[in-house]
Length: 345
Ligand code: 5GP
Ligand code: MN
Figure 1 (cartoon, rainbow, N blue to C red):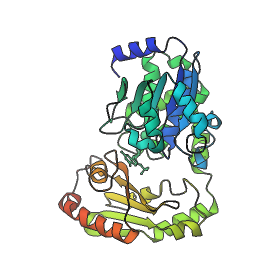
Figure 2: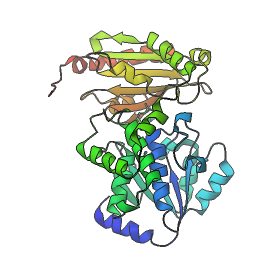
Figure 3: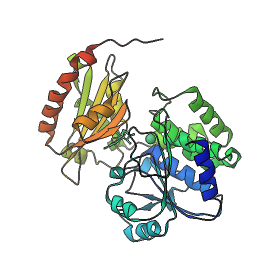
């Protein structure tokens, strides 16, 4: 966000407003952390603020301060639509295209509110009056911190805001500040969030150490299904509906599974294909190391997108057909995936 935009926005928010904050569908830690962080910040003024999520999210996110106030569009349409209709201001966080909010899209297209976007995904659509888009950022949570900083309000960050933002930065950097988007600035932000009350150890515990036995067993099943395509330095995992059923799948249970593939020595691309339980499609997560862009790959072949090293997509074919199609399209990248990339350690 340019400085003059910030001054404009500050002016626009200087009188009480009805504000709605929206994360993407199937919200992750960064989406919930950033929307709630911004929610707690804007609530310090005389605004009427609500977070509306397109749908539900996993249990391991249901401890964040303010989480109980989130309205879920798919299960509480009446409340959600009346809030959207009354909104003067809509903040869209951690996504940059209305396609990422599914059923909410027509309602946002129909209203006459002012839109503000805070997001770190590539190729943003042009719908927001105030646009803070930066693909180099570790997370939308880090951007909310910088947004508050630009509003000259860092001293307003309390324990609740710090906790939500810390949780989103942690999850979006791969659970341990591991992705290359983690910079010295990210660490300075995180240090300040700890100073302002975020309890790093408790947050880590709440996010990662609340496994059920069936979830660990589902992970065992996923790891057994892992296939290595040696000549492409690529691995993939499949999970079928019946496997999910067998291990009592709950939303969020497969979060992070794809990263295990990347932990194999020399592997550059890891993919997980998961059959959706309710509808007939396959949800795909892509992760990479180095210059191979899974954003481009997901955009070109799997109706998705995201970041260079982490993206998502979908397939409407069967599992077998999807894997065959995937093997055909990855073929083109063989030379690139076989190249040695320099390391600087
Ligand atoms: P995940 O694999 O964890 O669902 O998503 C990885 C990253 O890609 C996240 O930043 C997520 O927001 C983004 N992403 C996931 N699915 C899609 C999609 O269908 N389209 C786009 N543009 N981004 C996606
Ligand atoms: Mn994010």
